[in-house]
Amino acid sequence: MSADYRIEYVIQRRRDGEDDFSEIGFGSSAAWGSPEQCADMMLADIGHGQWETEPGQPDPADVVRECREVRYG
Image (cartoon, rainbow, N blue to C red; front, top):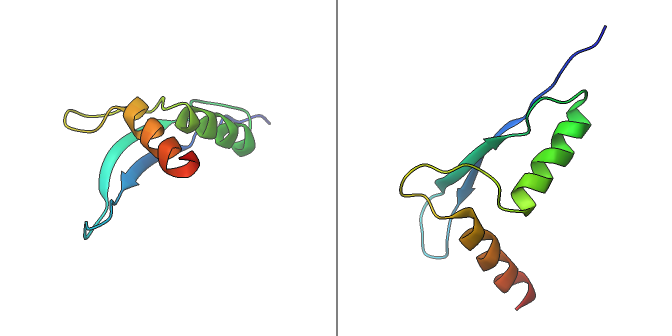
């Protein structure tokens, strides 16, 4: 018996000085043959800033750039 799997996710961020997290994006791994494949695709999408946003949420490319600047200087 075969099955397809999908992981749906929400990305939230809390900046210094903020009391709570706010949603900045969401996405789906699409359908794959195993949860592991879904996780790989989800991580690739997040790492490349390829998640979806709603109006008012930051551009994923800006978020990825900001994270890299903090991490690598």
